[in-house]
Image (cartoon, rainbow, N blue to C red):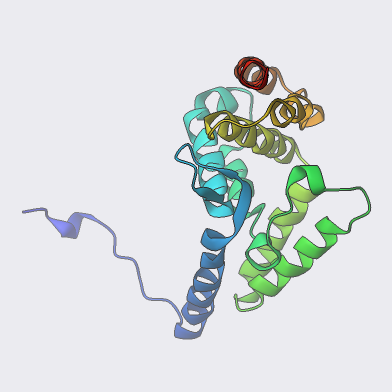
Length: 208
């Protein structure tokens, strides 16, 4: 039997504070039903929550390389987890439909604030600061999070059931300004691009 006396206890917290935290967690669950334009390899529509999970997983398995360059991996994981939370309310806008001046970022920030309203003030302010850091690419961690965000999407697209050549052609230019910012993300991008080109050639052969 494990001697639990060797481990520190986790004290109970203020009931009102806990109620706000749980209300937020329950509201954030909506991200599981927020669908993206992409799909899983089985063809099921992908949720934004699934995208955010695999984005964080990419950071976790690359933590040695990131840490060696002085990147705050804990901060980076936090950014990955909060960056799309506003979509729990407003939904996802596919990349081909995004246009300059569409106020998408402003709307997502407003929705994120709404989602955080039930939280204790100190937590909501901390999460909003993380969201702003990501949105404005204020730090090295935020810039890397944005690059990984694009790469996760590209990697998912090569797993999806086959699409037409135009779909893959769009991916070859997608988010390059973000992924070209670091040697590591350029390296991953080169592999994703090679896979994408193979699929584009296959799609052209099918349609010939």
